[in-house]
Image (cartoon, rainbow, N blue to C red; front, side):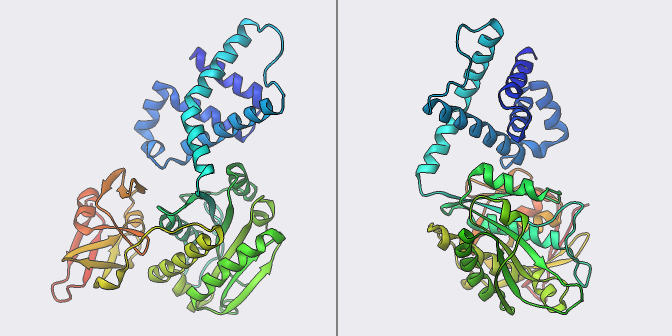
Length: 397
């Protein structure tokens, strides 16, 4: 505990109270065995491979180490001159230990920087206490935005683009903090996903894209070209807007308004999984084109017979699955989350509640077999004998 307090005080002394120091303290907390054991018991999601807290804390520590190296390269010594006191010696010892622990991570980041890998931050608009605009049937903009952001991140996996989400669940994040996440990561591009709305129901329809700074126009143009073509909705063009997330970010940034949630026809499309997948694929291709990055090989679904997958949970939803050699493959993320599971993706496999499952990439999205999916979640699956290409999935008791 003494070493832990020394490291906390050291962090605050060197960096003050900031997001960087907060991230470092979280990292140090997670290193304490007793605390870690209790957190693992009550909050298992904090220790998954895609843990946002751990990733953010590690990133902040890397930024701090890079700042120290820059100071040294400029001839500015980051520690005091003259003989060190006992406490200062302990301070330096702890800091050196921390630097050594971080060295492999720092080196890996350097390798990625030198490689072709690019980073894009994907912002799902609204969230938590802020539902965003409401549709004619009670749908919420924040839900649409989060679904699209997650699908887009999945679509980019395996490509030369690393996608980072500002939020992965229904939480509220201040606009300035969304921009800070991208700025701290020194991302190559930033996009924010939204659904449009007007004061009068059904008075407007279509797709439009916004940017603020001149250096963002090219990104906005490329994104809009692909997205508008994919939606098939009225093309409302690329526009300049004084929006916080596109104004406060330091890299090219654009805000996408896919369609109008309060327009009955647009709303139906916005919440159609097939429409979402088509638009996500178009946005992914636009990102890759803009960043000059290579895509990963994806399987084409045209050779597989489509299956209608109806999920009965707190709300019924219909998705498209595929029959591949008499095995039913279903889209993992939307169905898993509808059934209350934690869905991830690591080492080429979809994970459900941390358990890796056999995975196929179809149009860039992760699909798993219905039976294996059910065995992990206890979901009940029924195939309609009269209509063999219809499947019903019920949440387990």
